[in-house]
Image 1 (tube, rainbow, N blue to C red):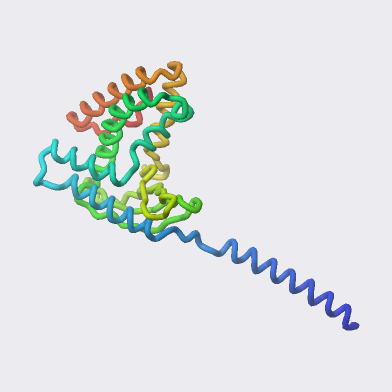
Image 2 (image 1 turned 180 degrees about the vertical axis):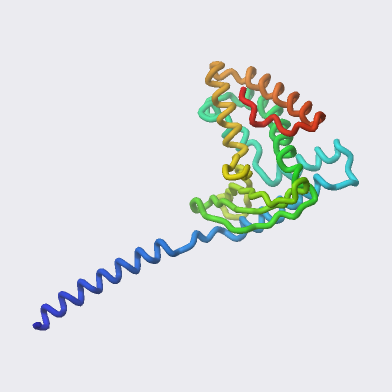
Length: 231
């Protein structure tokens, strides 16, 4: 074999090895999430859970404190607009402000109902994955104070453009194989309701008030959340 033929074979083998190395690196590289997102969830979620088990607070004080922490933890105005779906882009500011007052109460009740089984327990971060440059999904495990079993809870976290702060966009709770994303579920319900009612925000506010009343009754009766009911 002459030198030129040997060099051709060498170049072919080299290119194949390089391509294989690139493929291997792409498939083997883990999705490294921003560790600050994990720390943010760990600290803030546990603070919220402690509020639910704080025996020094009465029910009203607990609701107020829970709402304060959740508003710091998650950016509620952004969530409120997102769950309106396509209608969120066209709703007037006056209608949005009116809707937001009711939505915030409903959202806090929803979070409280879903977090209540974990009151007094410690949340533990088990991993995370970058979705893009600013978004991460943080995986956690919380032991239910009612069943003693671990429940997987996922947090959709968005980093600010300047990288200095974080906010939760959505919370996903593993219901035994399927994950219920609270904001996504709300969006599916609200968007469907608005589509059936000509985008009428006042009618949606009325529907949310019905859900709130039903949720309160279920809590009194010990029947849990009304969250999965269809409108």
